[in-house]
Image (cartoon, rainbow, N blue to C red):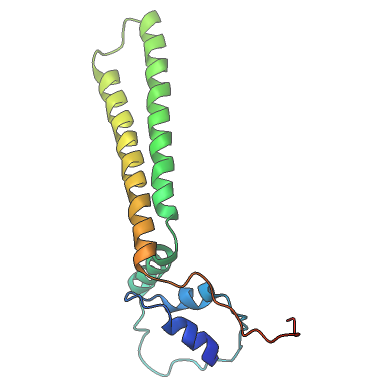
Length: 153
């Protein structure tokens, strides 16, 4: 159930790929829940299996957040940091122990470090794409209730 004001606010958002549950929460009007007892299904199974529910969850996350892109940047910094610490550790071991297998340490260091740099780069590029994505949705900056002079809600 939605008031006319909420419906008009939803209509003011012209985006094509709509996650309506998130949009209703995003516009910020007061909400309440209505509890009811649902009867058990008479026959058949739900047509909304786990795969569809996961897609629905991803749509909700990706429609309203650039956090996954930021997580990629953080993983990139962690990976590059581990590679640098590992390289320092391996240089120290190499100075005191000659029995290390030649070549494997530099290969592992290069893989971790370059993988981390790639994650950082993709995450930063993703941040720009995420900002473009938010802009092209043309969502209104804010919604306001009717203003009645002399009345404060």
